[in-house]
Length: 85
Image 1 (cartoon, helix red, strand yellow):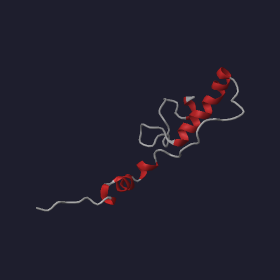
Image 2 (image 1 turned 120 degrees about the horizontal axis):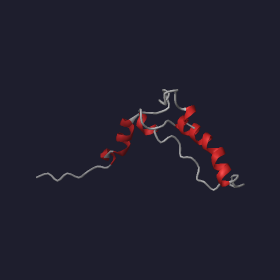
Image 3 (image 1 turned 60 degrees about the horizontal axis):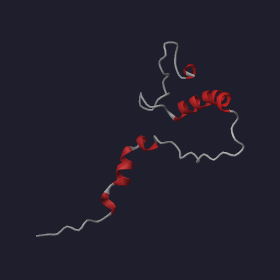
Image 4 (image 1 turned 90 degrees about the horizontal axis):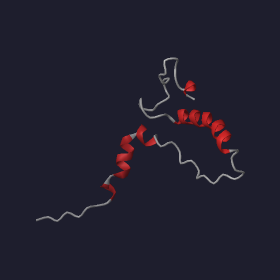
């Protein structure tokens, strides 16, 4: 399974990770595609109806623009009453 993601020395190709450690969405898809025949052989064919929840998107999207996450999660939306002495 690693052959699609690594060079002859076993190093990950450029672009296979988002930060040098965590796999990119495309790399996860390659991994999933490589696992399908193995899982089918061991577990049998997939069911006619898929009960898995739908994908939620790219979890690394928030990391691409961290300032947006900070702004969206900040308290500046809620006014805080300040008691003056």
